[in-house]
Length: 411
Image (cartoon, rainbow, N blue to C red):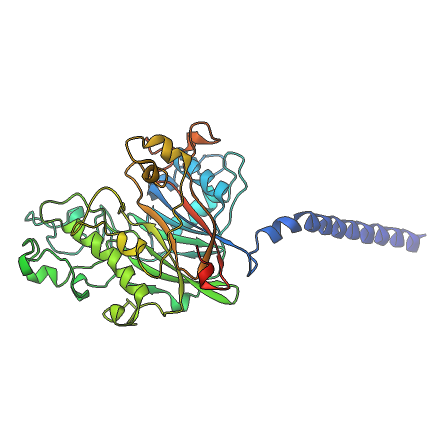
């Protein structure tokens, strides 16, 4: 009798275990299409996007629901909803506070992107790059020439505290970290033919020689982030040059913006043009001639209106570059909003200031689709954007890319 009872108990346990295994297997089979959909095949297109999220600060990231611990900052919830709708595979975020431990990026991922916003499907990014920036980093020099030290303008890049206006790259593609290059500490004076206002050759006499020789070129940083795309590599070239305003007749910010953009133009041209470049890791030169790349970021230069240097918009150094293609992503919202602009300019605007944000692939990549997230009033979710920085003062820009079998196929 006892043996029969033990047998029955064991039989129930075995059946229960098998039932659990069946349930797990069924759940796996149900979720398998979603898991496969979130895995990048080597041959499929990859969506690259850049999004300047206005002042994505630690203060905003720490605003949470006291019961759930999830983020409840209204602006960041809207920004996350936009990202979840567009679903970039590779996303460059600007104006996120940098911290050495990477906590701020982790908080945005966990409290916002990993949580459904406005019924959108959550997003996860297994690979993240967040590197030091010059913004808010004290220089110990009187860069704004007001006789005092410690102003936001006296940092290597304008900022009220170290790490303000940082950058982070979120990626579903693996990152070849050992090949990552940064130019945060590259000195402006190292660039041949630079435009430092130091009184030389008829330039405005703003920076004394002892300051000019120490200035850093990058207001945040310039990053070459190699991504592994199947058996190939694509380099994300990320930067956020200083706005060419907030200065005086010396045009120190306009000159810096020009040369920050020029750095990438020289870098992708390579050879002798990039021979002067030395990264923070001590490696010299630019990108290899066969290297495929995507230039991304808020470059603070409009090709048609706004600041000019030597009569030309600095961004033209990239838009007209022999290795760059310009997909001209656009939106109906920009066209409807910027009525004071010619239609062809308004359609590709990325902010109320014009076209400032770019995703510019090399010519060896094929553009399959592109756009600017700026819904017109009669389109869904138009309330996510506006002139009140409800999600940001910039729009998300995205471009879908695949590898071309022949460079001549590139758009």
